[in-house]
Length: 384
Image (cartoon, helix red, strand yellow):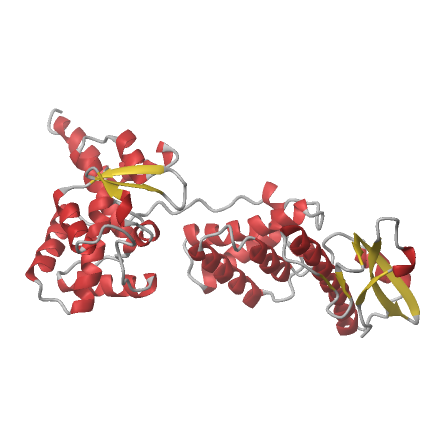
């Protein structure tokens, strides 16, 4: 396979000392130069590593262009070798200049994700990588240009059939694909937008929460102090999230300094909205336990991973005959459901306590209260 190198054309050095970079390869003994639209000085260029020296963002961006160019050329050459196609200079250039035709989508998405690594939360990074790994297992050679509305429908059916994914999970996987596809569009790798035709599945509104009786059963179990230490620790943290409506990521990041004036004052990681959550008596009791006399630092000093937490809380719930798929999210949903029920459907205040950017998001808890609506209209029963 032809060797691809990046060269600085020293003979074309400009008055400012900069010279253009080119990708160089030979096809059928004909040299092909592909301009990268990048010019550097001799001091900025590392001819051995074929990289621009430095650590700034501009350097990273220009080195990414170099990497993407070499990857695109290599992809064309590999595909030609695998299909037995004999490339000429003309056919190579036609493929190279055709946006997205030979760009592996998963490879592009992973490079784009790496660019965003400093801006995304670790949990979001893990979610994207899991979705891309699933996609690569389905079609490791997927090209950007192959993503069409029809392809998206077939892939959604695959997720539903082979992974038993719910509409909400399928939607999350498709949102990952869409995010990186849009990045490719902005970079000029592809022009067509299949998401204008393909409609994402509606999110699954199913919400797991505990009833007041079930929550009382867990608090009684906690107060009995009969659980093994690891289970007692998990249950304590679950109850803290239930009494404060905090998402597990926000709770993990909570600082003691953010608890003042009888409130937890923090900014949500997901929505960046500010939340002032008043401390109820049980929440204040748990805060005192975790604070342990300290005035600064992380409130929680030792917590299991999300996966371990969810596994243990399910086991604890089964001890008191709660047969539900309880996870960390159920704590927040339990707070919201019981608050909504006890405060006559005050969605406005609940939305602020949950840190939602729109009250429409909070409406899922109105759907939960179907039994209240049924009981309300039953007043007319027996009138005819």
